[in-house]
Length: 516
Ligand SMILES: NC(=O)c1ccc[n+]([C@@H]2O[C@H](COP(=O)([O-])OP(=O)(O)OC[C@H]3O[C@@H](n4cnc5c(N)ncnc54)[C@H](O)[C@@H]3O)[C@@H](O)[C@H]2O)c1
Image 1: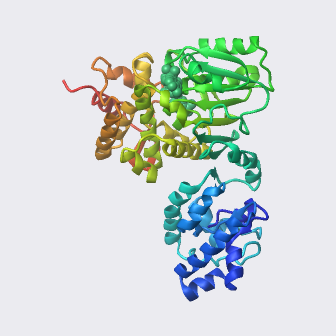
Image 2: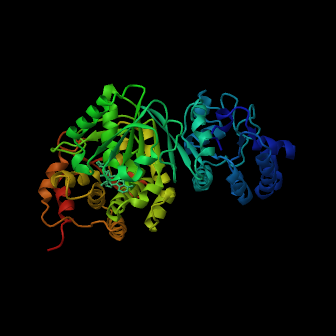
Image 3: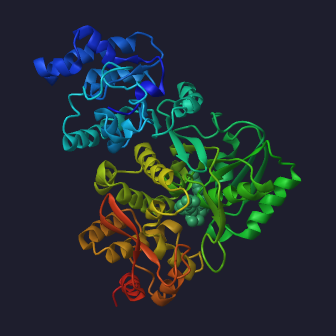
């Protein structure tokens, strides 16, 4: 309701209009006369007929997915979920402030209110009470997420058309491939999430010649799937190789093999390959496109999206880099099958972090011990992309993604990048952040989740907590003497920029040492 369906797609068969034609009165009048249950039965038969009609696009009323038969019938269709915040939906549904501002579809006379174009505003029977409307919006979200193949964020009127080639490509992609359209200040791109899709030619992944960058573990497993690459650069695996020196070998290899502006880098691997190859793409000839093909949990739930690229310095992590949004991301969950157990575990820390940020059904599933599957990967990707859409360059809300990373990065730096995997350090950092959040019960719950996944809940005894605290002072988000922390009030309620005293940080890090 209020998502702007009619303005997104001109000429769609609108189920609300069809229902009104059949009942020969407005939906509001029918609700008042016969009640919602009777309306839903009429709506169900109309929608099922519309879905069988062969119409290229059917716009569904907000409640139509309450019907099991409708949800089942949608299996034969590509289902596009137009994202909308509850605030915007409420404004559109009721014709209040933003709608009156002239930007919304409603104000332009193309409302997706019952009756479609030109329908009078305020006729929606379920948009009478603001709290009830917001509750309904939240209640419907998991239902929509369960059937959607395509997730489009709120955007301008042209967004649907720009995403259309990628949406169409789903028809020939492996079954159950999902598309999330990523939007941020630096650009927009398709994110495909599915199984068996690495190497598929999809909109955003094509054009020019591909130059594959991968590492010594991933290349032998998956490089052969990336057909038609002009050249492959293989780097040594691991964080210790995310350096300027290795970036230079990649730049020079690309140059020697004649990579030019019409070509693209394809980053096949975990977060190290993604960050390094993305950085090389951002800087080679002042910027060439990069397609990210993430193959670790860390990369599939987090690092492949959002355009942060870079390398480490011995002094501090991720200290040299650039924002460079990918041309496309192809997330093939099947590649996780070859990931060593310790790497799967390390990635789980980023899953827990993302679930704490998202709250809601993602947190509930993770807290209940859900395995990392395509649904969890998709929801983590959507969570990250929504944050990046609001703030690409870490000016504000994107900093929440740093949850657990201030101490996590400091542990990596203080131990020379070799002792802990990134995810293991983040697991420890999460526990410190939850202590600093004064969220003891949640910390215990998270510690249990991390332990069950095989992650460390304590630092090695010889790690110097003072050195870790000193490394937090190198955090890039530091302003003056303060290192702003991300704290968790509750799952889904995460706040960035909270100044914490060095002595409190020292106490939280010291607590991670094993009891003597
Ligand atoms: N850019 C961002 O927004 C962002 C976000 C989070 C993390 N990161 C970065 O990500 C990096 C960590 O990434 P990571 O945990 O993926 O580590 P990684 O890239 O080092 O991969 C871990 C190990 O798994 C191997 N591997 C990868 N995929 C495999 C597969 N499918 N089968 C078998 N082996 C495989 C790799 O060769 C490596 O040995 C860190 O440098 C971190 O800073 C970046």
